[in-house]
Length: 401
Image (tube, rainbow, N blue to C red; front, side):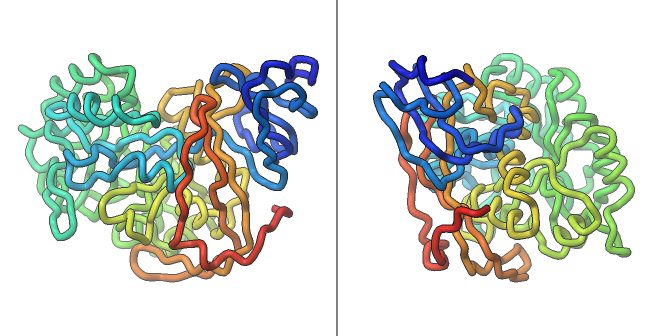
């Protein structure tokens, strides 16, 4: 933090918002100053001499939101959505694609989507050579049913050539995605992740294999995505308690990610797990061509669901900023410390009677909603889109949260 004597020359000052920065243990009303695309100072009275001041009193100022599970290889894969549209709607600055591309088509993702987007796009590379190639409305063809589709050497080589953008290995496990090959796909994905010394993100679907079988194979730092999927094959046993294998995995350092999507967030699982003291590590959307139409919608909507499930606002922000940044080994992101990239999301919290719905049709009435105000990426203002699926339910601004 600096005092106001250094304010002259700041490009931007966000003035008077509640700053939530888990990494740096900040939860206070203060100003944030930006210069040359980086965080220059935090404190009070920083506005004098600044080129631009944004009054954010009553708003919540956070590191730029990071969605660690998206599908944005737009127009080249059937499941993917426009990264610009989803970033504008969800107030995100960084999108991490979760295995839309494999070694066989990653170069197109890099050259035709990542390179042309103003947003930061990173990726988990699918261990399956063609990536997720058969997913759309009414279409579901598994990409990990045959060993021949998962050439570890090709996955490793593509990652080694693209470490600037690829942050880990992705595999989808369970049901028709892997078929009879089952845990064999997970074994090959772990082989690839070990070879490049990067985390593995694994999808968990219907059994076989079981939830316990999958998490038992994961290493410290690996990510189990869809952690609150509904039965069958959920993290909660018949006794209503979190499975022992899940707790053992967490103790070992495995991370648990929401990844709402179209089939992976059930209130019954979430509420039982939270009641048993088991919170997620990461919040993400699994936004794709179906989920974008609801009930998942996007990262901000998923954050709102978890906020209304009883997680605190600082927890929800941390699970969507600092923690995903550390999970993908990008400690430069997800915080507002001096010298960090000036990726900033500004939100307002409103009272709301919005009725949320999970993937099996269970509904819960909420009491609050986070809505986007503004977004800065490297200090540059980015467009923020309306959220018409939530707006009619706002009851007025609530500054007391």
